[in-house]
Image (tube, helix red, strand yellow):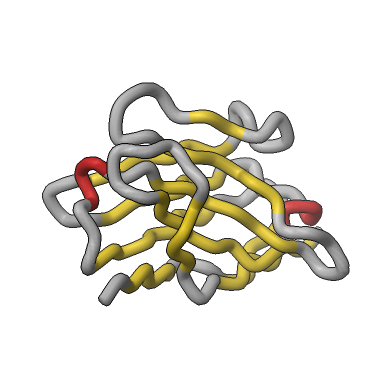
Length: 119
């Protein structure tokens, strides 16, 4: 059974930082592309970043230079370091996993963690 469990969300002031974690189980993590998505109030879910099992990470233009995605294959965990947070970053952040050895689509999703950035 696949499980993706996000943690690390919370309330932070604009300009602050948070690090999200996503612990994965039930998948072959080291050969799985992982992604972070977010959904703000009244908005559609959007891609934030992804980190392939091979290759370099990709970022949405809105977070480039501020967010960094990384992975720890030994501990089946993917991280999203978020710096210089802005109120518009407020959203529920979701972790996602693709089928092993593919770059998409994402077929497994976590339950989400709330990030709120106050101005």
